[in-house]
Length: 195
Figure 1 (cartoon, rainbow, N blue to C red):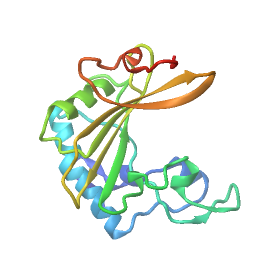
Figure 2 (cartoon, rainbow, N blue to C red):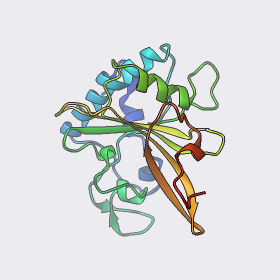
Figure 3 (cartoon, rainbow, N blue to C red):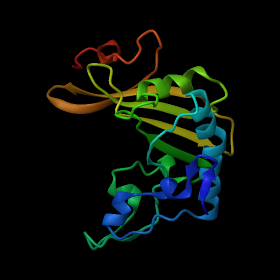
């Protein structure tokens, strides 16, 4: 297997530093691979096209949910669990789902993460299920973009921003529906008591 789509390789779709460090297999089943291919063909290729046919750097796509022994802990766990992934994470590529995290910041001649988010948000040909601008800081910098697709149902086109905030001296994550009038300015989304 070389590619999941013309510009996204199978290797980048299954690459996991966590799996490698723990001596774990991160190979998708045929059904999970079909889900990754659907993400590549129906979302990632269109996303790349509307962003000027410039490369988009993959951080992670597939994370296995299969229980296997970690060479570090000696315990049975999954790649998804080791990274703190939600048990229902779309990165597991089950039930028609597939997800990827992408980070273009720091590269010349590429769209920034905020621009990538807006290219997806503003273009209906990027037929995503959900797109999230993750870990937005006080200056509006977006750490990475999470984008999903489900090949078994109609896409919801949900756009969300996520940032870290403090409430009662405790650090938490906040997810809010994206509002283009608020942009990526964290303080525009804070609720009472959040800082």
